[in-house]
Length: 120
Image 1 (cartoon, helix red, strand yellow):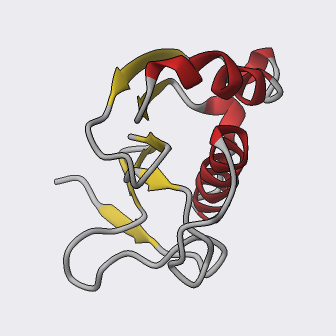
Image 2 (cartoon, one colour):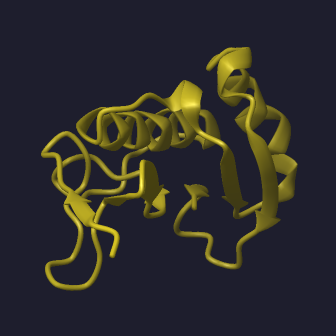
């Protein structure tokens, strides 16, 4: 039987207790929950798509670090945008991660306008 370990860091928004974990480590892989542009207090940050993208990446990076890995080792990212017209600006920030983080990626338009960007 495989073991799994829940990951929790105070450097990313807290998950809802008993509902989900920020990430799970199982069989040498890290499975991350989605990330939206919240600060560590759970407040959605102000700013445009680029600010939201930076915050999501910051949150994901903190969770991955707590799990003992880095964003450069990510295999797949699902990006959810409120408006596909934001793709180019989001991608400018995403590309700053470098070629090591150029994982398989999917972009989808999300119905909620409350969150400009999200990861899953």
